[in-house]
Length: 108
Image 1 (cartoon, rainbow, N blue to C red):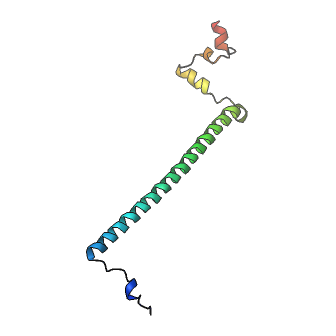
Image 2: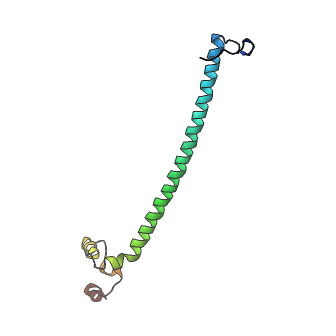
Image 3: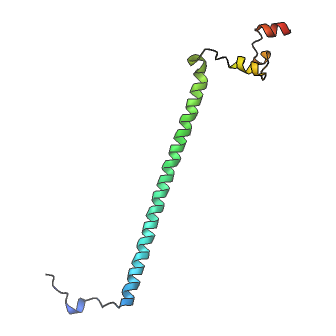
């Protein structure tokens, strides 16, 4: 059992109104602290997301450069795209700059 404080050291008794005001002030103070912590966490999350975005963009750009650099070595076969486009009438025979096909030689 706790000993009661000496009569001279007891805090003055609070009225109901004063107790409500203290509780409200404490609540507001804790709410502000919580809001500050949430904002700090949001800033950290935004920084992490920004770094991830930069990383993804860098990796995507590197993959694009890699594929453009080695596409001829990885897939050297002509997939017939030029012939298909030529049949649609979009690309004339001499538009692809080879000038070695029979159609180009016959048009000269």
